Length: 136
Ligand SMILES: Nc1nc2c(c(=O)[nH]1)N=C([C@H](O)[C@H](O)COP(=O)(O)OP(=O)(O)OP(=O)(O)O)CN2
Ligand SMILES: [Zn+2]
Image (cartoon, rainbow, N blue to C red):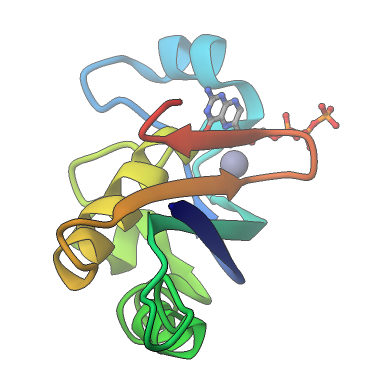
């Protein structure tokens, strides 16, 4: 029987939503204040969901301590207190929207998660704005 286990994490980061193919006026029309040149920050809340069979020996789908260490080392260290546009390889040429951040986190974590386990990322950019990848 499959069960889903969850881990919550958080990080703070600055970003600017901007498409370099557009002029400033178009960026401002599409992204509003999020395109202001001097960046702004969010307190991102991250939820990681792992779905798989319960191991009869441990009673775990996955050891949540191991998951927490994986996320701390590979995601939080990389993004926490960073400027996503300037400080990370992931967003040098990709707009750091919540959608793209969730996809990046999925791609970072996927190789570390057992292949027969499903991974889902939910990312809250604000208490009311959040995304899920892959979509359910
Ligand atoms: N599809 C997306 N839309 C928006 C994204 C995004 O990543 N994906 N991002 C932003 C801005 O970065 C930011 O999230 C906007 O914040 P804000 O409008 O202030 O959101 P709030 O929930 O705090 O605002 P309320 O006024 O309380 O609704 C914009 N869009
Ligand atoms: Zn923003």
